[in-house]
Amino acid sequence: MNRTDLAARARQAALRSYSPYSGFRVGAVVVDEHGDVHTGSNVENAAYGSSICAEATAISGAVAAGLRRILVVAVACIDAESVDGAYPCGNCRQLMNEFGTRWVIVTAGEGSDVRRHTLEELHPFGFFLG
Image (cartoon, rainbow, N blue to C red; front, top):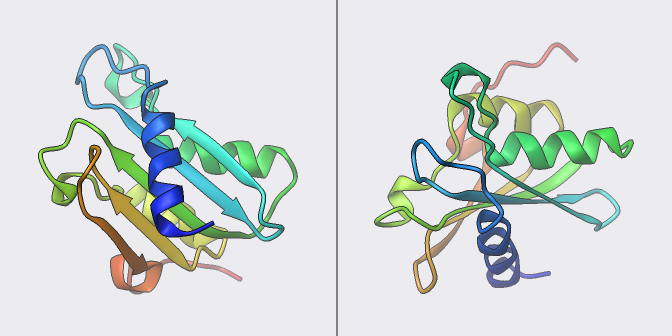
């Protein structure tokens, strides 16, 4: 699956976001070591600290399915003004690091740029015990 397809799937996942507080709909797609795709969307909560990012939702689903290696994460914030407002937070970058993510694809709404980065670019010196 190419980055354009992954970006489109991430935008679709964002449509399922539960974001009544921010109105900031985010979707994510995770491609695991077997090429299987897992999706997630952000889930907000009135207690903001209990909210869950789309990337964390998708990664957690993949891990719950028994996976331990994630090759690619694509994220789309369909309400961002540009792709610059759609990058994963530091917590999600560290979560990607934990499962060996190599590539991160970032986009915003339909027709926006689709950028591809290595996780190392976005999260140099990530913490890892192994």
